[in-house]
Length: 102
Image (tube, rainbow, N blue to C red; front, side):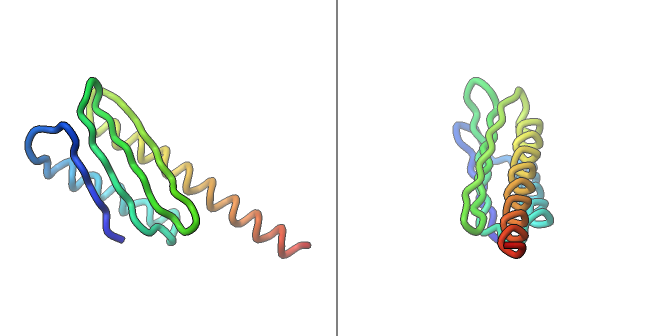
């Protein structure tokens, strides 16, 4: 799993944010093994925005969060993605048990 990190409208290189984004993306693996490619995008406009997009087997999940700090936005967007992964996994398990029963 290779994590892409992109900075838009941000001056200079931010190794701390880059490392934090990679660590957050690695955490997704404990919730779902089928994650193909995570992409974290930092956008600096009126607010500090973080957009996380991940490819999972059969689906694309995305979460966006804005705040006055990139770390806060990264954490909130990460929480949203984790909820989406858990929901996707629960639906898949429910569908599997439904077909097993029928």
